[in-house]
Image (cartoon, rainbow, N blue to C red):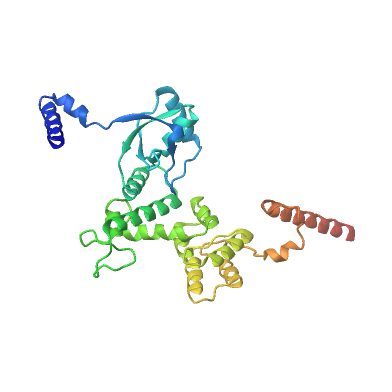
Length: 316
């Protein structure tokens, strides 16, 4: 009897759809939108994209205050009954800043890997993406694709490759993005940079290709390089970064080698004076912050120049 009931229900649903209008069928296929309390929503774990409180966010908040949220966010229901943002971290934050208690959302049934892939795909549509955001999002999506594909075949045993009908996962990922497989691999290398150096890449202080070469240095070597970059107010060119990588590969990279390489004159670079930070420390008071070091040195040199001029005048 129980099976008969299920069959009847199934037939009734099919019967209802049979006599629906085209508009009714179309509406029936539309995703259901719910008002979900912000207090029940959690961010996506290890979400690689920043939610910046910038001018764009201010405009989004103002728009939501005036017209409400136009594009619903996408959520995934978790095992504990709470919700997880798959797409719409900025919109969710904007609703919070606008003083709303709920956000309009579509709820999707997704596995963890399906959620990762959708999260990355939706966020890569942003107009402004930092190198670090691209790096970690590509890494997360590639790992999810590998898990979905299963173990690589014997013919496809590369570290980046799992089978998608004979293709490596990174090649499949490349067909779905604006970057080549090689460029995707370069971006993923950036995840090996220590946070302070990766931040310099995001700020445009270190170019992309030199940053990729630096990523092959060990963490202690990167820490030493960072100290030299800060003290010398210089960043490596591509050729210098390649040299650093080669010395690291041969186990010969240390602070002196780093300083020597960083002191090399770059092509089309104006002549400059290089003084080790250790030499200057004897003459700079401890209460002078690093950011004011250059000003202090210039003022000291100016004072000394005037002193010499006075001495020369007295000799006359």
